[in-house]
Image: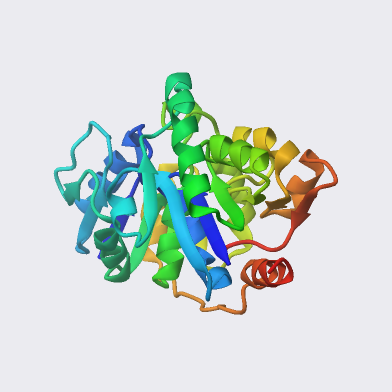
Length: 155
Length: 146
């Protein structure tokens, strides 16, 4: 199952939803979409606007791969569920976001094995047919340890 | 130690929850926005989304004073976004320590909230080294939530 998510952002993401709906009509694999405020309604896939975070985590967990806007929350959620994620940055000139800051996270995550940034939705179908395996590189988190040490120092 | 965690909903909340292990063994409460995500938190105070609404910012001030005077946290920690602004300034007035963590999505450019709370934050962290240049000497990189 492919889980598509556009996050909590108040603007829709028609460019992604439309393309994934088109792809869902061609492939055998089930597609479920969280479309937020996107006005376009899919015809080839099950969809909903928003749901409780627990349900979103479950959908991430039961998916093979996640296709998402390049929002940090959505990225962290997929990685936490150990799912590879394709991220499509929202762009200002398509009225998908207030600015292009999602391009920054897409570029910054380009070294991460489990995250693939796609800028042109025409490339999505090609990425989905490849079997992206999740590389579990979990290790001690430096930020957690640093904050813990700081808190001990001020006790 | 009593820790006050301040964040808006969505990704900012997800980020702070990723580092909850850092607060183990301490008494934690949240100040966050109303909504489905907040319902899942054990101890929290919620308010309406401040957005860019000056009236809501003003109304939040007595509310935040009340919370901080009642709870007396040892430190206020936030991942943003704008909800951090009233809480950090009031914490500063009350002499409560603060720590601000710029969001993971801020790679090259600081957030508006980051710029506003930087002057009065006790500890100011960025999650990407390249962002250090955009702030003064106080900014530090201690890793990120990934």
